[in-house]
Length: 206
Image 1 (cartoon, one colour):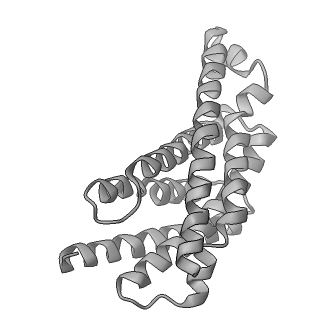
Image 2 (image 1 turned 30 degrees about the vertical axis):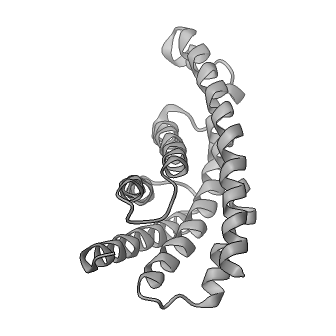
Image 3 (image 1 turned 45 degrees about the vertical axis):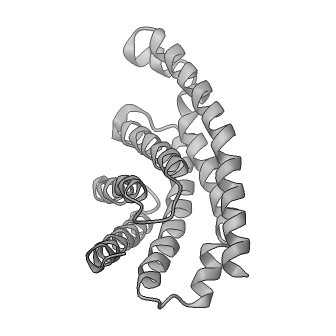
């Protein structure tokens, strides 16, 4: 890895860490409710992850391209839904709970991950942080997925939402088809990514 790439990745990880840290503080300070400021911070923090696909494609990092795309794409979809549902379109309890769950699961995961990646570039990673990176996922990963699905399923839980808001039923049926496709995608990629992290845990912690 060239020095230019090394320092670029260092800057990327540091910036991403800071945005997640500021977002989490803002979200907690706002009473665990997304306001305009915290929503903007969440969009930036999560949106930065698109660059990780580029990093994987360029072989700057060792992350598998396929799993990186799948994980980033699923997060971005949930982010789009959060933007839609928190901008006055819907305030169902499932969305509110889902936002709280993903906010903590995503934030803690990324704060640990980005800080470890940053320090690893300069061979400064402490053992306790390495343990956190490859242990916290055991709980945080399925917790985050649960929160994501609370948000994804919110329109279905509040059946008839699309019909009442848009005046036609095809929106709701189209969304149900999307949910089925997402379920198939999650059913495939969740075990794949979860097993991958367990393999990484065994390798890194040994």
